[in-house]
Amino acid sequence: MNVTVFGTGYVGLVTGACLADVGHDVMCMDIDADKIAGLGRGEIPIYEPGLEAMVKQNVAAGRLHFTTDAAKAVAFGRLQFIAVGTPPDEDGSADLQYVLAVAKSIGEHMDDYKVIINKSTVPVGTADKVRVDVRNALEARGQQVDFDVCSNPEFLKEGAAIEDFTQGARIVVGTDSERVKALMRECYAPYNRLRDKLMFMDIRAAELTKYAANAMLATKISFMNEIANLAERLGADVEQVRHGIGSDPRIGYQFIYPGCGYGGSCFPKDVQALMRTASQAGYEPALLNAVETVNRRQKQTLFTKLMQAFDGDLSGKTIGLWGLAFKPDTDDMRDAPSRVLMEALWDAGAKVQAYDPQAMRECRRIYGDRDDLILVADRIQAVKGADALAICTEWKDFRAVDFDWLKQQLASPVIVDGRNVFDPVRVKEAGLLYYAVGRGDSLQ
Ligand SMILES: NC(=O)c1ccc[n+]([C@@H]2O[C@H](COP(=O)([O-])OP(=O)(O)OC[C@H]3O[C@@H](n4cnc5c(N)ncnc54)[C@H](O)[C@@H]3O)[C@@H](O)[C@H]2O)c1
Image (cartoon, rainbow, N blue to C red; front, top):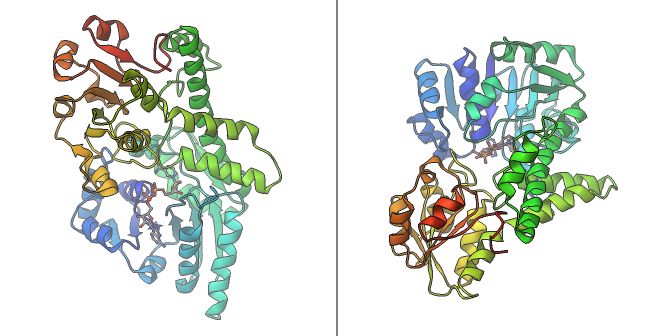
């Protein structure tokens, strides 16, 4: 099939590459000319395991193309995936300007039947808005061309995006058209062989399914952080509690890790957007409000612990930081807990000496050159001479550590661990002060 994908970010580029990889002919369009020029030279703008090789192979095979030309992109595919960003608006609702700009441009250029597929995460009712904007653009040209709009939310997670796209648990398609069902079935057939993962449903149900899934996962995290905060005050070890409850199959081990809060490009904005949708529908989302409040508070936890460890004065201190990305295996720092920590440290007059295996370039892009941010080449440099070590991301590289060595590097023997990476007994044996999340004797 000929497929067009609008947006070459985490979702668009993975969608384009994975569909090309099974033999479809794919045209990826982006308004970011630098990104498209880089992709043309084989440069991948993001870090995502396996993506670079997949893009290169499919470009070489002539099945994956890049353009900034909207007319060319619209003419190319029968299927038109919209995978552009939906960042939060000032009031927390999803900003649809990029999605609707694509809808308009499809209407301005289409000459034959198209299926317009909302893959971006968009609030309930967006398919109707896309339909109106496409129709308006067609009418402005005096054209009447048949088209359908469907919802096909994406559930991939960064760091395992290719695996999730190719072997995901489900492929949700919201549509009431038999023609769309047949085309979507054909598009996804190569990834739908083991069992039928396609779930057809109403458009509104599909739109809400994406938000419900992310809100549920965010709820699990905030719930566990609430229990961790309680454990700290009660002198219990939340890691033992996690084992205790995770063993119940009704609860499960996934997404019940306590930590310094969830970040990333999806959970924070999607929970907020769903809260906004709820209020617009006249419903007070009491649970979602709490999930969001607990998470905001949790992102302060490492700073609070550091302040307490240094008697309320961090000015002139240098904090070594391991991990900038919002989670391992990505370079994405959108809404990352590391940003909340660094910004609080700077406000308190401290310096940050940071290392991340993939997010250094992104950190430099966000914060630029500043005296109180020292970006270093490896985890060793990050702790050399630092007054304390803070851990924000549980990269594999950070898990095995010689604690005696670590103690020698640090000016004060303080570790605040936002991901509960270490065994507290081992750390303390080396004479380090170890403040993790919800581990009984942590600072609060
Ligand atoms: N990142 C994730 O893990 C993830 C997972 C599931 C769903 N989503 C959703 O998918 C959508 C995209 O997310 P992302 O992380 O890939 O975003 P992103 O910011 O990485 O990429 C968006 C891309 O769209 C491009 N763009 C903007 N306007 C455009 C236009 N008019 N035409 C063509 N391209 C345009 C931008 O230049 C950018 O390259 C969002 O709605 C997000 O919520 C993201």
